Structures are given as C-alpha cells and as structure tokens.
Length: 189
Figure 1 (cartoon, rainbow, N blue to C red):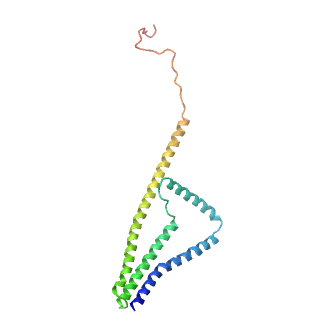
Figure 2: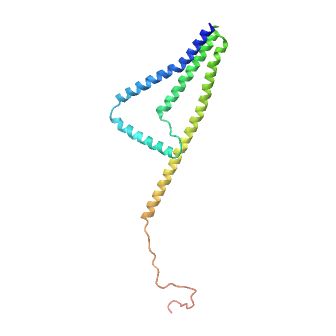
Figure 3: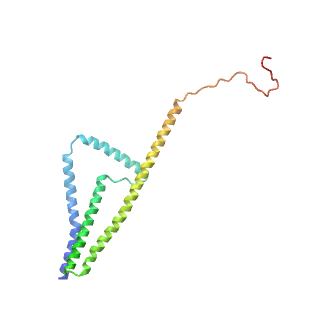
C-alpha cells in the first residue's frame, strides 16, 4: 500500500513538472504560427522600424557592457511561468496535506512538497533582486546615454557657433604713442 502511494506521489510530481512544459510547447509553436499568418502587411513596416530601433538600443547597451533589456513579451511570459509554477506547487502542497490528513499516507509525504515550494520561493526572491538590479542598470544606461547625447548636442552647437563667428581685424596705427619714451612731445608741438 505505501509503495503504491509513493509511486503515485512521484507520478504527481512529474505531472506537475511535465504537463505545463507540454502545454507551453504546444501553445508556443501553434500560437506563433497562427499569429504570423494572420498579420497584415501594413504594420510590418512599422514593426521593422521598431525592431531596428530596438536593435540599435541593444547594440548601444552591449557596447557599454550592460545587458540588453528583455522584451515586454518575454517579461510577461516569465511572470506567467512563475505564477503557474507557484500555483502548481501550492496545489501539490495542498494535495499532499489533504492525502496525509485523510490517513492514506504518512505525514512525511508532505515534506517534498514543502521543500519544493520553499526552494521556489527562495529562487523567486533572488529573481526579484536580479530584476531590480537589471532595471537599475538599464535606467543608469539610459541616463548615461541621455547625458552623452546632450553633451554631443552641446559640442555640436559650440562647433557650429565657432564656425559662424565673425573675425574682426584690429587696425593698428603706424606710430604707437609711448608715454615713457625719452623724446616726449606735447600735443601740438
């Protein structure tokens, strides 16, 4: 009886891991291909311009040694994956507690679910710190890029005004008056 329950618990844990992977794989391949076929031609030019701007920004960040920001769709997918995993682990914990409380399994069958959920929450905590650091680095990179652009604009304006400045020649008289000269003359002499 206890070995059958143990096998059932192993199958349940693998189901929690594998079923979302299978579902995500199916929706990614069919969903993207469906969207590509339904996309009209006119917004494609706008998308290309947006893609070019994004690539230029990523190249600028890469030159500065900073990681490129994730795309909005990628970020939403990561958050959705974290929510699914958290809800799956909570469901596994509740199921193992219910089975243990009903007397079908010993109490220690809850331990793997608790450990998995605790490990997942610890990883989420680290991920939040990494996300914060990434956002901070991206904000600093944007501020530095803005400062460089402002400095370049000011340098260009200064160069432009230097090129357009008018040079005035000073006329020097042939004879220079020196008040300390030996042969001083008074005016009119």
